[in-house]
Amino acid sequence: MTSFNRSIKVVIPARYSSTRLPGKPLIDLCGEPMIIRVANRVSKALPLADLWIATDDLRIKDVVMASGYQVMLTSADHENGTDRIAELAKKLCWSDDEIVINIQGDEPLIDIDLLKKFSIFCANRDSLAMASVMVPIKSLVDISDSNVVKVTTNKSGQATMFSRSPLPFCRDLPLSEWPLEFFNRHVGIYGYKVWAMRELSNTAPCQSEKLEKLEQLRALWLGFTISMFSWDQTLHAGVDSLDDVYRVRNVLNNKLGW
Image 1 (cartoon, rainbow, N blue to C red):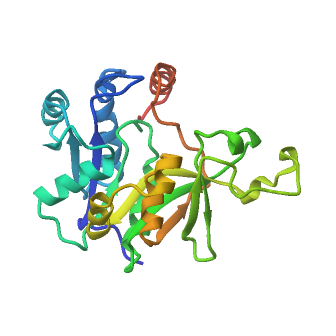
Image 2 (cartoon, rainbow, N blue to C red; image 1 turned 180 degrees about the horizontal axis):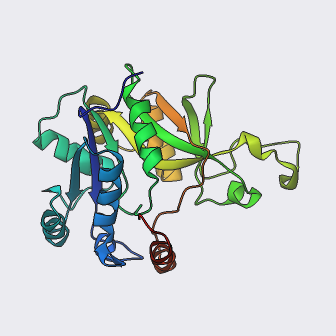
Image 3 (cartoon, one colour; image 1 turned 180 degrees about the vertical axis):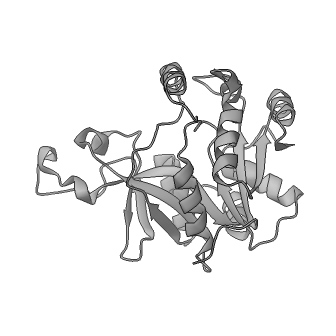
């Protein structure tokens, strides 16, 4: 098995504007801005990684630089993290076969062991185009929740479909009897080869992506294989609201080593 090595790049996209939480990357979490909390978790998990933060705001750039992390100012016009990372990769002249891992900038409690194992998962796939993460759905409520993105896979562990709707749909059973073991939730951690990321960024959104508001559907539309890494441990949710900020602060205040 290939061990993790420095050829893997890790980029944390950090956009200042947020409808629900303006300036979200700089929100204080028990003495440190959220973006630095995320970078510290990634650095602890992957100390040999070539780690970058890609941002659209000078305030974020200054905070990141003061903490000693590599950072690049990117366009404010990008609609998603993939486009932001693609700009950074182009400016840094990363080769087509480099592996890039995209870690969301609002995951200050991201699991260190997950990052380690997902990085190895990506590195061990010579034919990798794109990879992501899924976890078992353990609640019937989540099946109908449009904020919970469902994913199905083929026998090789490659994604066949993503949807905000119940997926798969159990036609002959009432929802209360749907078998949870057939349902998986998509987690927004991505790995891709630079060539695949560039093609994604250079392609306009497809119709299914426009309808579902799910960027990964563009990859399926292009014919990319998305290798899914299955993780069966509990994950801490990211930060999308003020309630999430309070939740994360509570975790940090009550747990050592974070």
